Image 1 (spheres, helix red, strand yellow):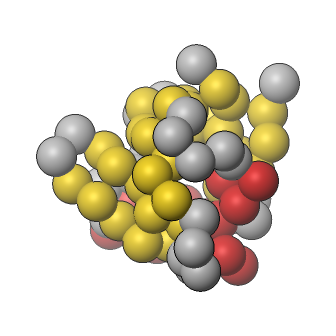
Image 2 (cartoon, rainbow, N blue to C red):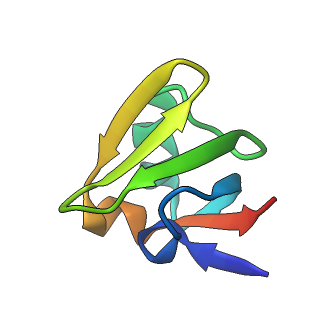
Length: 72
């Protein structure tokens, strides 16, 4: 079942399924994020903090609403 990243549970692992629109896809490609990647939601205090490999990224709530993820 897919959900948006802003609703993801902290401490859980997710696969990025898709993005809401092309501009979101392009913006996240700059951060090295693409569909099919596995990420971990680390915290949801203010922005959503995710971990990918050894990298941590803070993603604002508005942008997180545009990222579709699936729990793995």
